[in-house]
Length: 378
Image (cartoon, rainbow, N blue to C red; front, side, top):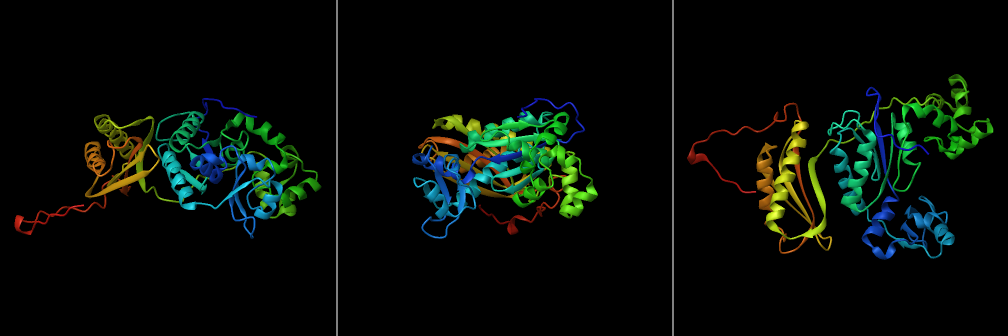
């Protein structure tokens, strides 16, 4: 297994992280239902009907249960398995929390699904030259904010980062440096190549292609003859070549930060000071992106894990930390914080203006006379 090197010497090399949540749906259910912990859990349809497995805990995977398997088959493999219906609205909420963490480091985030994404941190918002340290920090924050574990792979392209994230699951962090890539690929079994399915694997084995070294001996023309257009892809990945860019498929909708406390908090003075500090950090992130926003949202999670949000929309764009803090404290009064202990607090700013200069498109205030002036409240 290839483990982390904490620095990258060649700053011209791209730095790609692939983050993959561990048994995501099942882990969320085990987090929210402690009685399911350390037990074989299957998320999906009923085994009495024509249900299909959407996800399986690691305890269930030991019995050979995997996603897309008929639930009727899963219950035969593990009669004691616990079956629960998916709660996609919860999974989407947790996925959103995780992506907001990604956006603290880079805007180049390409989600592949609710539970995995590529990040290009070559030029990141933290100014940290080590992709490995960033990946470690992201994993730590995911654990702190959601109670879930993620595995991460770090390398110079998407293909290698994806493979690296599978090397040490669960809760792993693996790095394939440019210097290690050639030897690693040559030793990699052909079935472990991302993009090589069971049918292609069977055909490659019949052709004597057992690993990356075997694949590398083939000419591109011959690979295309055998595998069609995919032959071009196989030729390149055998040599560690993957120039695909990390392509964000959504526009950033908000900029925010939140923190889960090690102890539940009820001291309002301490909380207000914390909101001041958090507002400064959010404003700094916004200014780095040349962004402003109109809607400020306060998030509070109480001791019993109940979560509430309160929002206020301004008539103008802002990235002023004092204004963000002021609105957040007003919103705080609309919650039970203080009367009830909180375990998490967060602030986010949305309705963003991300155009050049951060203020283009802002509505101008026209100075009407007092007789024409109106007052509105949010």
